Image (cartoon, rainbow, N blue to C red; front, side, top):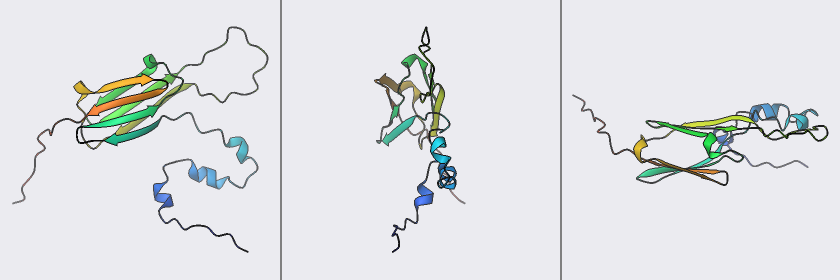
Length: 148
């Protein structure tokens, strides 16, 4: 008997995880389960939607105070950065056997198709979810060239 697998010709084109090749390379080794949790730090997960007037970004940034979130907009480039701080207990109770929580700097940067009107942009953060409303700038009079 043979195993049937579905042919997916565009699977490698859609892959956005840079560690996938690393994971595939070590899939059959015994050591891999020990390396599974090492992903190089936490990532900010986002959803981006668009209307004719604005972009809407919803980002999951759990465990961060809103004072530790920085958002910069430069034309059509948007950068979100957040610092997760480690809360150390006053008196350690026993030995630490392991820690899976991430502490440190996280950031995401992306470029949108239209420039953002920074003066009308809005950000809110509640329960670990950052919501951005990024209005598009009115056409900045992009010049159309005529070929002579």
